[in-house]
Length: 169
Image 1 (cartoon, rainbow, N blue to C red):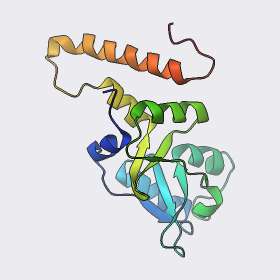
Image 2 (tube, helix red, strand yellow; image 1 turned 60 degrees about the horizontal axis):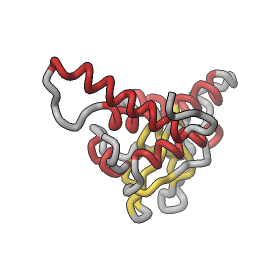
Image 3 (cartoon, one colour; image 1 turned 90 degrees about the horizontal axis):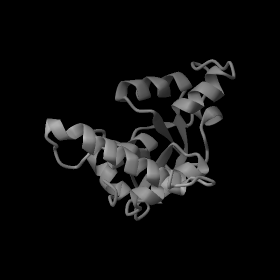
Image 4 (spheres, helix red, strand yellow; image 1 turned 30 degrees about the vertical axis):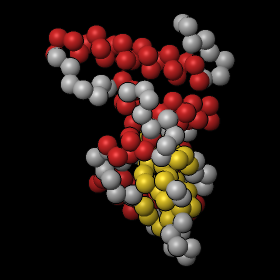
């Protein structure tokens, strides 16, 4: 529902563990972990500096930087193909502000922090689901109308934050 924070979205996720691999891990290891955990992104931790986050590796990185580039996943370290720019937001950030940031800059994942401590990752899909799926159960006969109305509201929010669009369409 609109009005929630990204921290509340992280708190509602089924996976509460922060999934990470070191930069020295091979792509094949990271992909196996992503597949096992059912996630589309994994954080890359630095083993030498208190486990600081060095980057993020996503399904898109796998497709463009490994598969399309013809690299061997078993011989390519994560440090060579990760995205070093990890965008972070505070847990108190609203869904609307996070969505705006993601749309304007083309991010699909954001790291969520609470007073400098990483609490999780949210995806564009997480935000869209939070905006469309109702908080309270709806009677079966009302579900289609409510879901359609929430989807239309979500599309208006996305159109409002996307540069060069008219939110009234």
